[in-house]
Length: 180
Image (cartoon, rainbow, N blue to C red; front, side, top):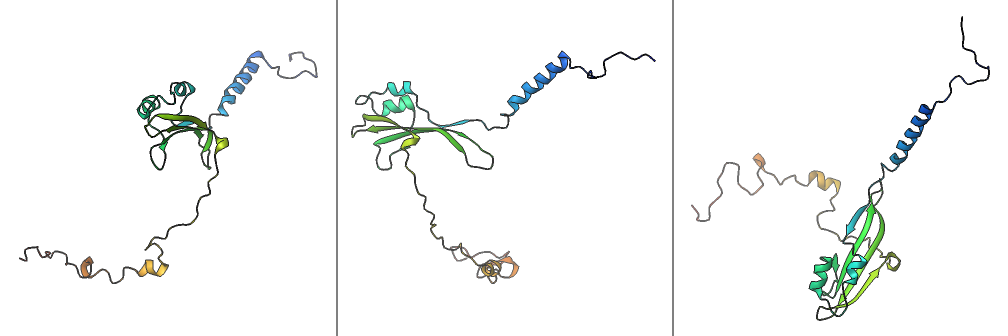
């Protein structure tokens, strides 16, 4: 019986260069998979660049010039057309939670009475003011029905053969406007 000679304490299998390369390749392939399940970043709104803002000169350009350069505003002022807002943000969907908003930016352009640009400014998240939401609801008639009203509310409203009480019977003709 011929056995290969090897020392007693020697490992049975020696790692080869091919095995090490396969393990390294598997680790490299697994690394990007960590971000595979991460939601993509979505650009929302009209992002205004610094180059676009440099082309607008207060006291010279009008509403039409601004709209031709930047496009339609995201929002205008509530009372009148004196202020335009270009709002943009980057969002990412988080599983089971609300959207994660990052890099939110608002460009505010104020116009004078003639429609000429008066002021341009950027508003960041640091200047945002918290808004308390009102939790009250306006009552709507007819929506607060009890269980008994829901179960028995239509009893007596439907006559024989499925016609409403006071209406015409199925197959009967409704009286015409001429009375014939």
